[in-house]
Image (cartoon, one colour):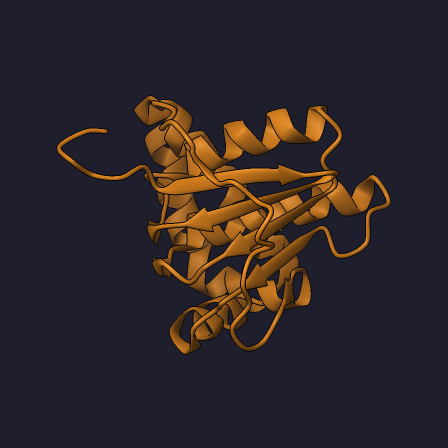
Length: 168
């Protein structure tokens, strides 16, 4: 733990599903940690992620694009409903809907308790270089633009700036 801050994720595995409690802001700063963890989990046979957003204070476009990329990847492998979000507050619901992510992930309405048999453990933060973070941001924003035509106007100029920064 750095500066007394708790890691942004707690995780538990139950069969072929992973439960992820998101704490604080789901953002480009924590997305590399989630991506590294999800990549390993998928390699180990996980085919569903359940994201508990009860302690999440918001999600940025990079984080939403990462969820979209995970959903697409698992759907390509033939898994239905690979990403489920629970305990989604009104603000997060609006953010998710504004980029069309709600067409790709399942959102369970109302309050949901995690299974009592789960033991969540803190997920260690994975450091990422500026270049790695930029590459992740480029990939996630490309996914968002491909998923919903409205996102080109929202993220097109931002994506161009990211690409220029990567080339620079």
